[in-house]
Amino acid sequence: MRIAAFPKGDLEQMVVRRTKSIFEWIDEARTLGVDGLELHTGFFWSTDEKHLRRIGEAIAAAGFEMPMMCASPDFTHPDPEVRAREFEQQAEFVRITALLGGPGATCRVLSGQAHPETPVQQGVEWAAESITALLPLAAELGVTLAIENHYKASTWTYPEFAQSPEIFLALVAAIDDRVHFGIQYDPSNAIVAGVDSADFLTRVIDRVVTMQASDRYLEPGTTLDDLRQADGTIGYSPALKHGVIGRGLNDYDRIFTILVDAGYDGWISVEDGVNGIDELRASVNFLRAARDRWFGGSTAVRVRNHEAAKLAAG
Image: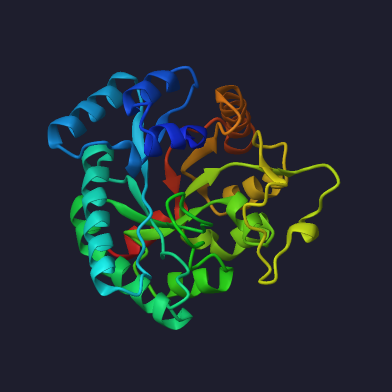
């Protein structure tokens, strides 16, 4: 298992206000003891090839890999012209993923926003069509598209269209490819969707290709039932806080048991730092200890179900 870091606490600075550059983040990450960096499409203030190659050189010089790209396409928008633009932008970031991460890297995909005008079945069809249309490019470049069980991108108006496990699983089932398409599992987002994170993992483990790790904890005197909305979701309630991995609501002992039993020994990206880099470092340390305990200290990248799919495809 290899560990990556994702600076969730720096998204405002790096993506919105652009007061902290990707080069500053790469330099800061040297202190974390991770193997790779998960990047976000908003970190690229320019997609000029010369600039991209500078980023790749900085990542390599710091001793990191770039295994995962965090992209947030909106494939469920009711306007076909918007969907077409989202498709082209996603294709560009698949290419950037290949440039910086090489064969085997993953580029996140999403369904899109839960636009009120988009019926469920129509949204599933649009999202499946867009993702399927990206697969030839992903195959050509050796990239895997990884759909995350997600809540809401920071720039979106509406929550994730496929936040519900039933809709998420319907979309995944609509895409047969298991070589260049899989799931990026996020346990905390399962909680936000109103379900047990380990129970959700058992439903998707056969298609998991990457994982984001974070944790949530409740304000004292609050329960998940207190936060539950009419549709069963929790949402990003102020009473549901980010915290150090392993100290919150996720049952990581059970999660790691499921991963190991399924032969998952791949990338896990730490999505933390909301309360500062010290908490991000503590979360990394938790995963380093978990790697020793659950994965025998392995730094391999082996995902048994994904490798079996590749063999079956010839």
